[in-house]
Length: 212
Image 1 (tube, rainbow, N blue to C red):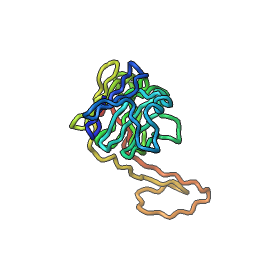
Image 2: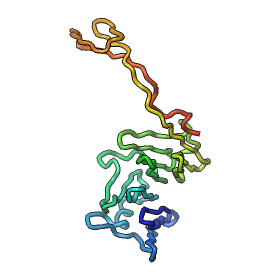
Image 3: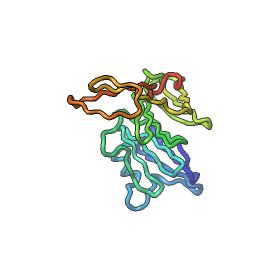
Image 4: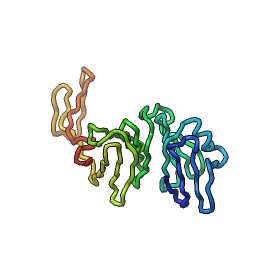
């Protein structure tokens, strides 16, 4: 069940795939509503992707997770689009939960492959090795503090975002004909045409302190 910004209630019956989606607009229920011209209707989408969950976001888009790992959405203009359409899906597992958080990041819960967090540029995979209590995800919700609650077959995991700047990466040395260090600008001519750069910085991956 999800509610869009027009206060319409969207219901997907997971126990009965043939039931499709029904929408309540305040006056009554509509089964598998058709979007504006140029996009597929939900019944056709169901036949193509066998979608298993749905969600809405603040922009008015409706998101659909597929049993084959694909994610599609209908934007506020009624156009049907597919996430990562030129590449294979992130996972072959069923998409079991969807969330577009307040920061615009997309959270994809799967049935057996954990959670994928997509920000438009990078993809982060949260698994049991990284602190997720169970890889079979049932639901994903965000609270007012920005914490993301992930309900799984084995319990609930809470993701705590850290409101800090990424660690700085510092160049500490350049190796060409010899090692240069502590240089702000450097002009090199090297016969071997191989130059190595030494740098140091923190890890950009999520640590266990973010997952509890």
